[in-house]
Length: 193
Image (cartoon, rainbow, N blue to C red; front, side, top):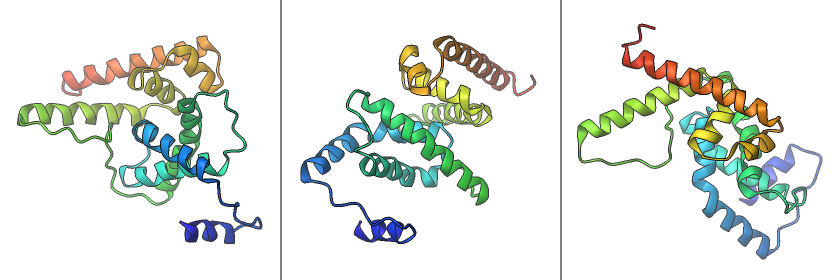
C-alpha cells in the first residue's frame, strides 16, 4: 500500500499524507466491512464496468480515508459513500469510454446459485434487462432510480444526497419508472415496441 501512495504522491507536488492513527484505520476497516456491498452495488448500477468495480470500490474507500478531515460527523455514512461513489463511477465510466472493453457487469455483487436452471436463467435475463435499462437511462434519473428502487432509500434522503429539490427527485423517479416499465414491456412483447 505504501508503494501506491508513493506513486500517487510522486505525480503531485504534495508529500504523502501522514500515517493515520490506528483508531482511524480501525474506523475505516469497520466502514469497509459494513458498506462494501452497498458501494459495490451503487458502482455497478451507476455503470462502472464489472472488471473495474473492485478497483472503484477501493477508490471510494481511499477517498474516504484520504479526505477524512474534510467530512463532518453529521452526515450519514451511506450518503457520504454514495457521493464519493458517484464521482468515482463517473471517472471510471469516462475511462472505460476512452479504453473500451467487453461490457460485462452484474446488478449485485453476490452470485446467486440455484439448483433450478430455469430459475437461474430467469434471474440472468432479469438482470440483463435491468442492466440494459440502467445503461440507457441518463445519469440524473439513474441515480434516483438506483437509490430509491434498488437501495430503498427514502426520497427526502435522496434529494438531500443529490442536492436537488424533493419534487425534482420525485419527478425523476416517476420518469425513470416509466422508462423501466417500457423496457419491461418491450422485453415481454419481444422487443416490438
